[in-house]
Image 1 (tube, chains in turn orange, blue):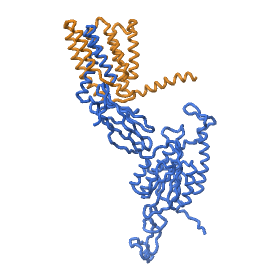
Image 2: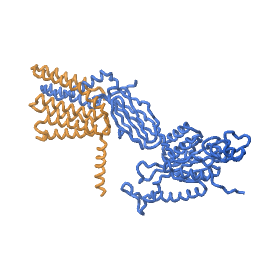
Image 3: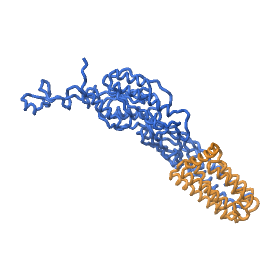
Image 4: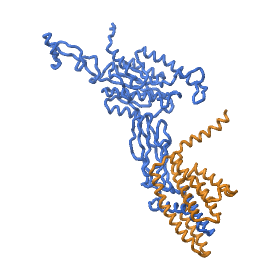
Length: 183
Length: 438
């Protein structure tokens, strides 16, 4: 009787803990998970379990997603989008539509987890928070669309190998500009 | 204005790294289309940086502050604790759960914009300490965050002083003027007798009907009306918790004592009497004699300031003297020998003593005893506490009987109607015929 109880008690505690999670947090974390899964499916069009590599990527992303669902503020959350990006880079026939779709799914997942990290799991979000969050995303979407138009326009041009040096320098400059100095 | 230094969140790092990685991969592999996958996150990071600069938050967020609000509420009432923070920023607060208190939202964690309002409802009287407030301020995207711990807020829950369903008569009025009928004849409204007119009698009291019938001048004699001194003695030496099988929210002995004290005080203060409080257990502190609504306010505030029992035993304080004829209401669970002795001292000083029994009815309840160890929460204790309390309650019966034999009525506190029979019997005893002792 005792071993069964020791097995059941942590399970019961876990279920009781899940009951405390607020509806807003459930919504945000599920949006985050759904966004990441959509991005993964977009990055692996041949199927999540098509071959050994896709299975490995799916399991890794799934594991990291599970951790992020429990702890939305975890630094490990960086792993999932990077793996999706690498999976996308490994494909020869990548259409702009699919890349853009994966990007938007990653944005949805990222924004949901960022908002979920503002309160604990049992935290309640007032409607004003949702409104502010969505309002703040509007300029992000506008900038992303503008950037996509520029990228698509520039991608048609044929430039020399010197662009590689300029591009690398631009990427480093961007990284330095965007990355926060201290945490 | 105080600024809280803000730091980038994990989300900001994620967006910056993933966005930049997408650009780097696109450049290295010569496939600009890859940028599209990282562009939304890059845009997110850039907008967060731009918003930070535009709103002047490079040095941090405006520190949230607790707004002053109602800090004194009725037992069972609720108060709102409001925090004001930076505009267009998400402010999230988390407070630890407070015993005997309901929070809205339920688990004390809420995120709002600019103003966060947490509602605190009390189930019991006393001083509540809500907080400390763990406050997190983030921008609309959740890219930068500042946190602070704000000091807790004290809320006073004044004990509910229910209106007693009891007469206001007292056995021995000892004041000068008031509402209680005294045994002395004088200026009043209650008719004592109709007698012949004497020099000095008021003309408006002449009974013209009797004068006309008898042919001699007769006047109405009345009893004087007096107020009295009511002393409330509280026993806070120990707080006896209700038995585990008692319903949720059942009062402890201290709860019952404080509620009974507040109710009796309100009852007599409304009648115009002078009420004082003497606490045997040092928990409440003395309240000097006084009258009127102000005294009621002073008294309930003093009761509300009392800190709940921390389990440490306190020494009993002795009341040396009391004016003969004072109505003394002792609220006690009648478990301490010191309190019983104190009641004896009060009786010997000529006070009219009433004891309000504040031992929770579930403590020592024999109906749960079945001859087997009592099972609580699925397990039975081997310490036999329920049986021990049952024996203690049986022993206490003797004390109650001895008090009653000594002329001290003992009544259990069961709410507003508890004191009615005792006070009625006391007022009847006052007017009952007495044997003259030679």
